[in-house]
Length: 285
Ligand code: NDP
Image (cartoon, rainbow, N blue to C red):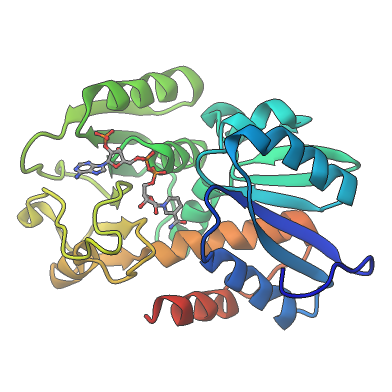
């Protein structure tokens, strides 16, 4: 913690294992400072064995909430007092909010994605091609379905994880969904409105890694989004731009999940531009 604990200030935190240079901390504190909010965000090293104690600790200290990263997104649920709608459907929490003394688990990843998308495309009635079936894909697909997406095609390397996500979507939300095993060069299905990379391909340091997608199947009517925040201008983003697509980089989702977190914790609507600028400085973008 960079400053001494103060009773005058409200605290929010981030539980991660191991502790790391957390760009979200920089982004959140930039927003708190910009809006003169008496909040401070701290990153804490929490191991799986100490998760229960850590949640008891934030209750005792009166934290307003905290973010959770891997490996705590599922395990934290048993220590909370309730879940928001999409966190309950996904079975994963990345943001905890204190409401009337109760600690409620939310999932702001998918909400952040939808918020980054809506200025460019209304999700209602769209067809989505989603690459990946891990935590990010789950968050995006559930929240897009709740926002009215009509059809989702999931492409994933491992069949088991892909089919597990398809089953979850069929059982828990209203959307047509199909699975395509991603075992070679994939083609984006005709009529797709939105293409999303929700895999870790392209994340630093593997910045030149390429998704096995035939870029001839991109059309200029499509919006192409990448979840990779570092570097923001991934190879996918550059390829899609060359094809005339609208693009959203991974900072869009990261900034907007932070915006939602700050709204939950403080009731303030933070300026996303300030938050994005803070991240761009961290990532040297
Ligand atoms: P998971 O480990 O849960 O899932 C990873 C996914 O990527 C799986 O579908 C996996 O396929 C796939 N994958 C990984 N490597 C390859 C490869 N070489 N070829 C094909 N598929 C591959 O991770 P998360 O979903 O939690 O995170 C994914 C990415 O999203 C991370 O890079 C993370 O930084 C980013 N992210 C960004 C956020 C933002 O706000 N911008 C928020 C959350 C995450 P398989 O099932 O076959 O293993």
